[in-house]
Structure formats: structure tokens, C-alpha cells
Amino acid sequence: MPRTQLTVYRHDRRKRALITLVGEIDQESAPLVRTALAQCLRDGIRTLDIDLTPVTFCDCSGLNVFLHAAQQAAEVGCTLRLHNPPPTLGLILDVTGSQFLLLGGPLGCPPAPVEGVPDPAAHIPPHRTVPLASLLSGDAR
Image 1 (cartoon, rainbow, N blue to C red):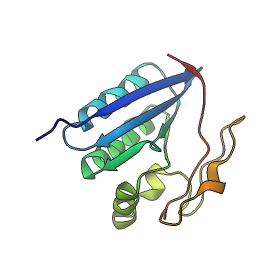
Image 2: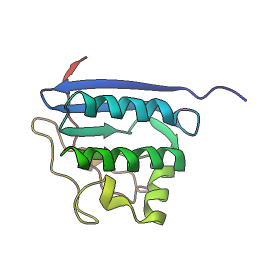
Image 3: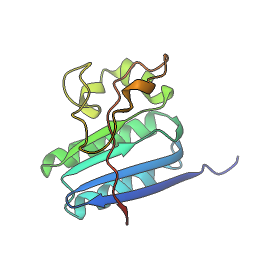
Image 4: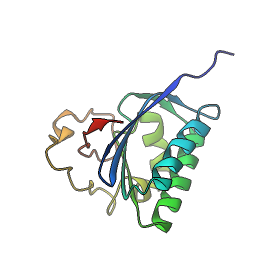
């Protein structure tokens, strides 16, 4: 079986971080995501935006990592939000009813936009059933 490819990029701006994940999130790559998110919390990040636009696949292993990270974030006063989940994760979020935990606000309400970043809502693909949100940009770490 070929090895899963996943790349994690992190951009910080003060107490806010944007994590961009590129590739597939599955049982093999989920520990990499868990480690990256835990490091943000150890570094004192208080707002954590996770851009999933370049993710081509995410199974329940990824959902488990995101739910665990959201719980850990809440315990230290951090806000964690997923942005632009791939269709596989969107379906899992729909089926489990966990959108409100990871996408922000009441169901159907997208998180507040990030200042200075255009709203990508104009590019909502018809198959997306979860809200989209603006993303943070910052200097590469």
C-alpha cells in the first residue's frame, strides 16, 4: 500500500495561527495533524484556523483528531475552526451532527470573517453542504 502524503503548513500572527493541510487525512496521517494542532496549543495560540481547501480526502480518523483538538482548545480558551472541508469530511460532519463543534456558531452560520481576507463564499461549490469561512493569512513560520 502506498504511503499517504500529507503536508502541514503553519502561519502565525500573534496569538492566531492558520494551519493549512495538503493531501489526505487518514489513519496513517492523522497523528501528524494531531501533533501540529497540539503544538499550536502549547505555543499559546488562542485562535486556530484550519484550512482544508487542499485536502483531497479525510476519513473519520481526521474527524477524531479535529474533535479531540477542539476539546483541548476549549480547555485552554482557544477557538478552533475548520474552513473549506472536503466533501468526504463534509458528509461525516453532516452524518454525525458535529458541524457546530468544528465549523463555528449555530448550524448554518459561518464563523466571523478574518480581517483583511476576502470571503470565499462566492466560490461555494454546489456539492458543499457545510458553511465556508474566510481564512487568515500571515507570515510563514
